[in-house]
Image 1 (cartoon, rainbow, N blue to C red):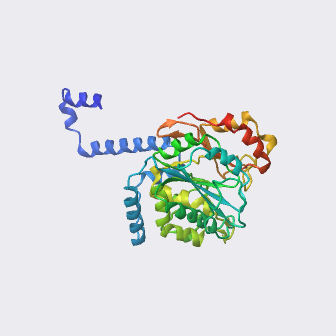
Image 2: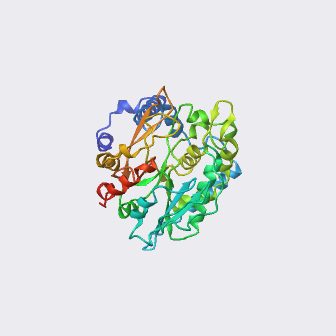
Image 3: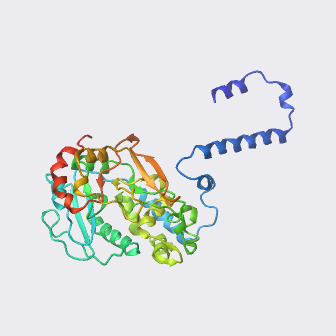
Length: 379
């Protein structure tokens, strides 16, 4: 800009003023196109077609009355400032078929931090048997959960609404029975409570198990180019939890049109797409686009790798806790493509993961013994 100002402030050549207006406009338009093309080529987060759609005006069609209302509600909720006080808590939401095999490890994690956390359990098949006082009588009213069905999302929302009843709960963490903590409670508490975003994975998977699962019936509210994928294991701020509970419009599209076999050769998995798509559309700058729960998809199967006791070592655990790049696996190609995403916390490079899954119950004793040695206590 400085050089441009010098040029315009210097001696003017009268011959340049005689150039026809159409020539000046043509040069200007071409310059803008070149700049736009350069901007598209630098965007690594999205594909070229997605980059183009993101550069164009967000609304290329008239929104329905329901969409206008939904977006107005979201805007108002997001205006509510976070209320972080000495009484603020993190709500740990356990989505499990029954007993939690790693309660002993979680007991070590929670010990000494009473008043800074809440525990909620959604057992979908049988009432758990507890060994930790932090988990006793913490079950909520639950219902049957089927993998890949909207009932999984319903269970997540059931956990959220119960946790929202406590006004001190300011951040919400969804966990499974095979999840373990990777850091000390203090580190985890600061990481989540003082983050300026929610940690929700959301990325473009152009393959058959990504945008290939989009249903035409989701239109016009959910376009194919807006369809996202991500792990269901989220953490979210209170404002975002309220937004999820307030949503009826976008949830209804996934309830009706996202499930195994709804359309021939399409197996839409609701918990992998609803929240990633919803937040990418309505508050894209408010989410991380990666999950703070580590998982290993190296086997390229329907479910991630399960880690057994003989795989667990101090070196393995330290590698997981120190990883600073998150990996998204798409369904493109024979074995899937990998997209790598740098992890930052409020703009600072930090380890990606606070939790990890899936771990076999036989790894419990080894993990309890190693826990004091691999957890990060730094701020």
